[in-house]
Length: 84
Image (cartoon, rainbow, N blue to C red):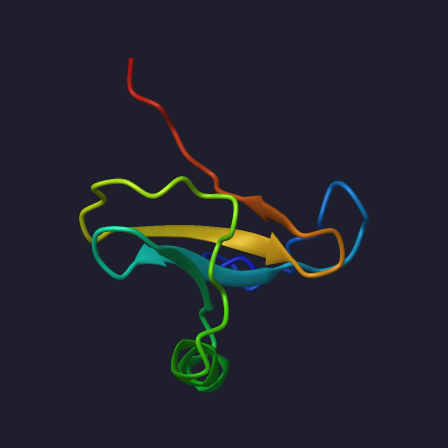
């Protein structure tokens, strides 16, 4: 669901509904996907799920980036506006 208007976000790759959530860091070397739904979020965080495996570790500070994830085709879409 789109967090702004509760309209489902559809994956442009496979046509399935995407999950709303955010990419977060737990400190210096890992990024996680956590769903927005509080119940699913708690289970994912406690279960160690959602680790982004293709991220190169480095000196990351704590971050939070909102986006949508498709479980079917494993695509993460992060809407953004880049300032020139």
